[in-house]
Length: 237
Image 1 (cartoon, rainbow, N blue to C red):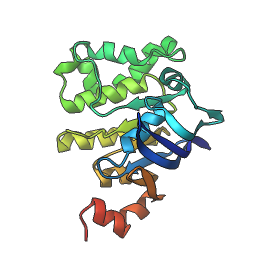
Image 2 (cartoon, helix red, strand yellow):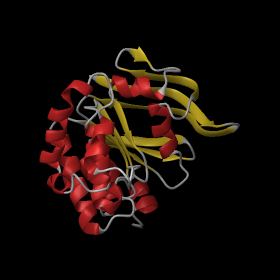
Image 3 (tube, helix red, strand yellow):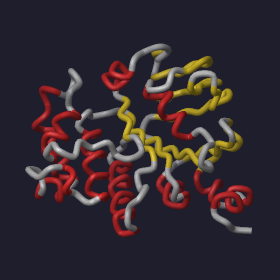
């Protein structure tokens, strides 16, 4: 079943056009990766989906609804949760308070305790440090907190922008184990990730973006074995 669909979407910042006729989709229970070099427009795609950037033309469809000019909070209420680059945790607040902030939607407020128990079951280290300020956590633990806070919204679609950015290799592996677990639970994910191999190994399909346009789309295995992709993004000649 089609969950999210972008149809010929153009977007940018002021007079600067960044995306040109972007078309892509995510189905229910599917993991999709966006691949491309820095400046290709990947982050702008995610911001346009979540409503942080307004589409200048084209259509963004969520199930049977046209998101159009719908504000960010309304998209969150509908089940779209966006974890931006840099994680965005509130350092002076405790781990627990950061999680509470994730359950602000009408559909999750009454289930806050249940959702928090689920997060602590998934991230045992967060339970151990639940009373500590978020700023005392390591980078990897802060990324877990950002994912946990997004899970508190009980989203239909979890959007992640560079979840492994700045993390030590051992923490990168842990983050992707968690994403694999979420995939196993049937969660739908849309991921931008600098580690191309890890992203495509967890994804069902992928899109390659170049200068604001989709230049290639295929199943993940096919993209990993595509000579153009291997040469451009894996350094394989």
